[in-house]
Amino acid sequence: MNGYIRAALLIVLALCALGGLPARALDANGQLEDPALQARFEHIAKDLRCLVCQNESIADSNVELAADLRRQVREMLVAGKSDDEIFDFMTDRYGEFVRFNPPLDRKTALIWGAPFIVLLLGVVIIIRIVRGRSRMPLDDEPSPGPL
Amino acid sequence: MWKFLLPFAAFIALAVLFAFGLNPKRDIHALPSPLIGKPAPPIALTDVMDPTRPVNNAEFKGQVYIVNVWGTWCEACREEHAALLEIARQKVVPIIGLVYQDQRDKAKLWLEQLGNPYAAVAFDTDGRTAIDWGVYGAPETFLVDKRGTIIYKFISPMTPEVWRREFLPRIAAARGAGA
Image 1 (cartoon, rainbow over the protein chains, first blue to last red):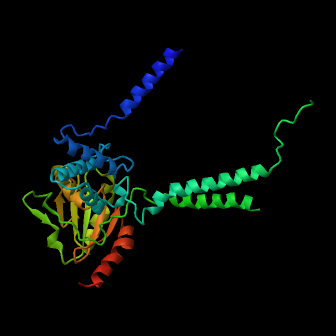
Image 2: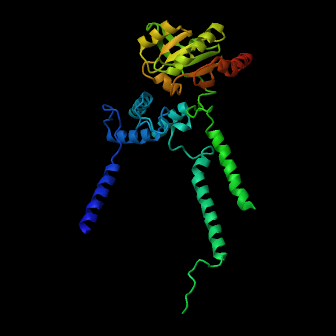
Image 3: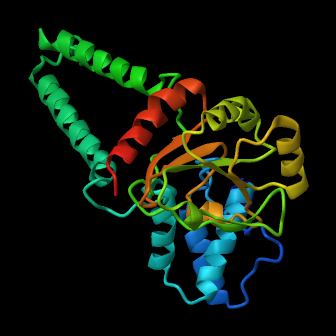
């Protein structure tokens, strides 16, 4: 029995390790020579939305626009541009929507704040329910049987 | 009482939200362009019909013009082509074509077969001009004023109705503004 559990655990761990492998960029000859640049490239490409497919990043997408944008990001990296300069280049042309992680500002405050607002709402509702219940008679407790 | 009204109000609120969200007339892929109010990016390419002939939108500065992004792979572009031909016949403003993600001979054949509404048709060889214009599909149509500022972008096939409703008033206003 113990052996089965151990084997199952090992399989789960192996799968987790696989999931953690960095996503492969699609372009076969697109790997940047400098590994530091390549790491920055992968990070940036994952944060840029492919506007044709909209729920895919340009790192994951196969469409031509995504390939063009990946080339653009690589060229700017090689030219020594900072991450912010590259993101600014993209948002200047495609708008904030091109970023999966839009920076926190007045326009995006609601997006970033919404989960906390909902959480707060949930807490309030739970408190109300619990308070309401604690005032109710405990009628669903098993009635004490004859001694 | 509020115990019954509250879920009802929540339901109405959701229904209204969904009515807006699911409105079939709303194109979920249409995004507002951050380029509106900004100077039109340069187009410095060559003509589809003749690779030795340069196409440069700087030459159109001083007049209101339209940039129409299309490709032969784009079904919706075929759909809007008749409307573009009609617009060209009206000679209100020149239309610059920008061929996107395409092959030169295919685009040339398209214009020879369907007619050419464009004052000039730029061939975007590597998609760089399209990136500068924030293009993410086709057809897309930009309206540029005399100062070379983008004042409007329309994403979807052009129709005579869109032309009358969205473009003509803006063109008249851009002309009226002088400058």
